[in-house]
Image (cartoon, rainbow, N blue to C red; front, side):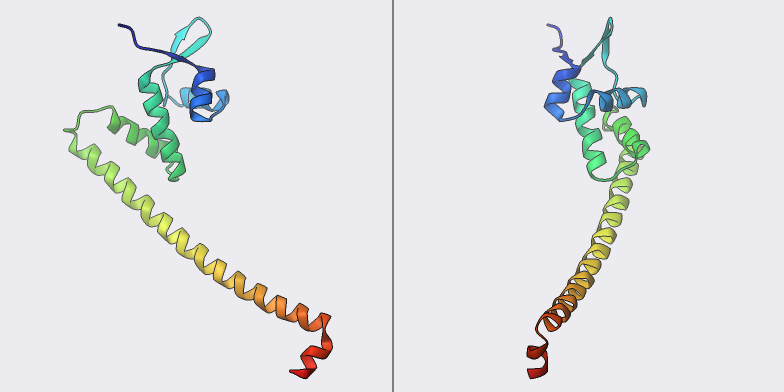
Length: 134
């Protein structure tokens, strides 16, 4: 029984990426489609790797980090140094994301305060009599 291969168009449709994206990942040696003439055909392995690439991108990992994680995925579960490194990368990225979230939350609160102040100021400018009555 042979493995089912999917075309670049099917891969794009399933994973909502462009052909250019797939060619880029192929050039970076993250994907390894089978070539039949000028056609690229993707295996189940390529599909699994693309899922991991897209997840890594969503988490903000660099392509080099993603490559390391893909290398881990392709090895046996007995490779403790690679498993440890993947765990460390995940912890580092999570810490960065939490820091960024906290900074963003602070900026949101500050902007909300500025907008409230601006709203009051505009209200007073539009209705000068109501400001004098207060």
